[in-house]
Image (cartoon, rainbow, N blue to C red; front, top):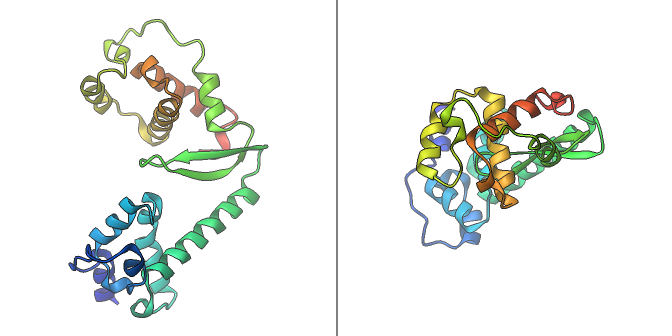
Length: 206
């Protein structure tokens, strides 16, 4: 069992870059290298979120008695996607506080369904981005997003905690999609994250 877990988590050291995506997907899971997983991600055959879930789910399959030696990568991927769909359905049934779908962005900016709420995260960010201070007393909080190097330096100094970090990152992704991120400062996004964390609409998702 231990050796199988080691093999699974390292995905061996064989490079399959010469194979096509279809050939790779039909390969047995224990013949697939981690670099190949990344190649499939880069080709669009698998998302970053699925890439993170696959090894964990494969271990779960082992504990349930599944023989990975006979499992292809496509079969594992199909199982992972079915599992994620089940999670979405369970979240829809169990976390149902309103009529808006609530999605959280992963660090790879992929949307993950959390359940139904009173307001979507996009709407909450729009609401909480109103009436922001003209100036922050801490200079670092006035840094704008038009200077990536300075912004990176400032953001590493902030100890936001898990919830604020997640909401800060989500606000950054969503405002970037709306092409308005350059209008905001570090302090603005921090304040937006704090406001959302305290809002009654987001409490069920914390």
